[in-house]
Image (cartoon, rainbow, N blue to C red; front, side):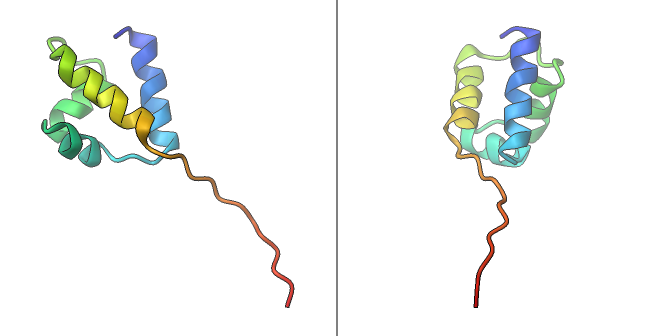
Length: 72
């Protein structure tokens, strides 16, 4: 995956508030390795694991905070 695409995926991860720990547990790799991936330091990542990270991040819902006025 290219540098900019990893940055976009990381931005999506942060926007969705997905923890590195959650990705690591879902993909069955270490938290350190997931962190290295998002910092562009994991050079020899297995393509299956990389695809699993991408699919996990993209499959998670995005929550937004909204102010709702409730009349009593």
